[in-house]
Image 1 (tube, protein in one colour):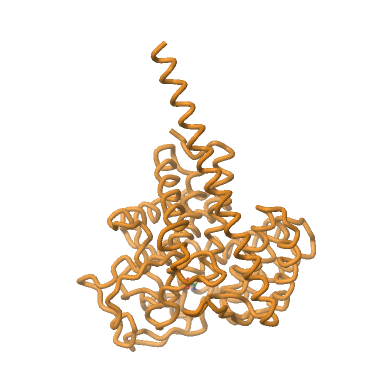
Image 2 (image 1 turned 30 degrees about the vertical axis):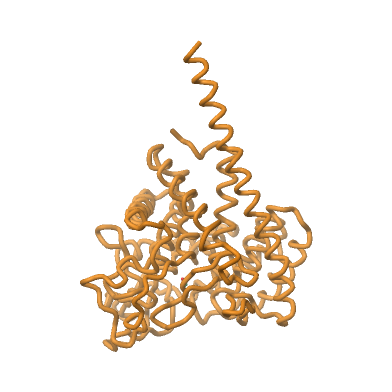
Length: 417
Ligand code: GLY
């Protein structure tokens, strides 16, 4: 009888936890929907400029469509339509997605995945409209024009100058670029042309070999010699120092290698995703509040910013809510591929990150977030831009993570033990 009562109270506790977490997700989706209704209005008054952040007064700051962040606003609108079934989000998502169509032939930088997969990719996933599919495929073709068989990689930027003034490189690849590979996998999956997939796999293997350190921390920028394919330098663009680990870069790595494993089932990608996730978790667990510092080695001995980096002038260890949101979303997907013990660890850490982001200093009336969801992200300290502000991509991955969490809760996979 006593055992039976224990069993009943355990089941009740589990059900209550599930219910609490479901209400937690529902409350956050409602919060996001309410704020994004206001953001749509603010964005509509800008004449096709894409929300990116806000100033100290909470006024919207926006970009043209060529900015790497232009796909996040339409992407979030698609997620909110999916989550709420409110057709006003669908109407806005269609409009803001269509504005981006000219980018399907854009070849000037590598961010086509962020721009076109988050917008048109989500549009196709949700509506099944073939027009969206053909635009995604054409965008993948444009991205693939930046692939070099010599370096085995997609060129990120057309040039990169070291913060320390050591060099200027013409084939830089940043770890973030992994995120654009989803566009290439999509194109192969939907056209049967395996060349896109081969480029994606080659790029991911090169990233694994050249960006990821033995302890699964990561370099931000790897510069290749375009004639020989040799690595000429390993540096940072947005991190603290060349030998440090920029937390958002580490989060892109977890997300990117998890996605590559989902698409290929190549165990090397899973091993790398797990290693990078474990490194990230070890770092945030050293902190009092687990929202990662903008760089895991900021202001530490043994790490020196280049002489031209603004990081030299910043003594506050800012947090980066965007890195937390990306990592939370990535850890939730990775939990599907990990063994039970690891899966439980990933879900638990993602859950903690989402709870932290949903309250206190990251989401409160005291923090100036304009019509964005989360405060306290960092765009780039070395460039002295967007320090401790809301960012549209933090919101996108926060909403995505909430939806992934909701799906796991529905499948009852948040407690694999
Ligand atoms: N390049 C994308 C980022 O700032 O994370």
